[in-house]
Image (tube, rainbow, N blue to C red; front, side, top):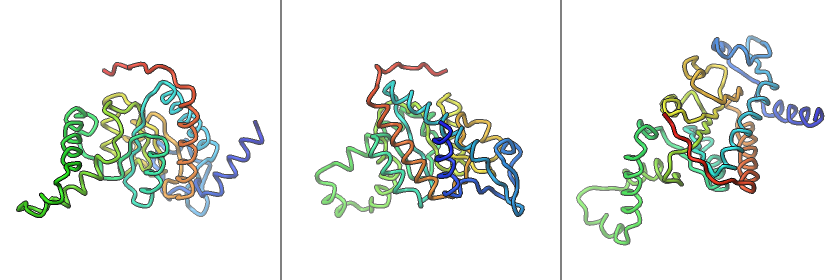
Length: 237
């Protein structure tokens, strides 16, 4: 067990996951190891604990036939998030969050259905040349917003890559009591940090760490699907 922890910690260190900002927020102080050259150093053991808690949650959700919603607005991570979603058959969005996506889920489902019906229409190409408006920009935007949604049910968990840029998604999930797994950097606002149920303290600008995180979540989902139980509906207040 000790050797396993040591190997994981060495991997974390190699990703620069421990590098924080110059001025960490007050709520983040408990995740710090200290300071070096006036830069906050994130405690890698705290990152490891956050990863374990996140994987345990995701494993239990997938085992109960639940569904994840991967949220990302950093273009650098678009491809990684999309690959993770497709490999695990989970939903994702690589676009700016639309207000009411969760809190108005029923309406969003209808919008998605209309978009899919229109996009799949066999005469779409012919119609686009005869219509007085160019629908291409709108279709591209709709594709970014709804193209990655793989379920009709409201998600059981949000997995957020860059929490600072997704405050609206966090607040909506928190309002609906949907658990949130999120990578939180040392400059995370206190109000957002308080709303994240499963924070993973880390340098969220580290591409190497996001790649490691993607592999970890993908492996957790795939392994958990092998031991799936009948889905239990959880009533949310």
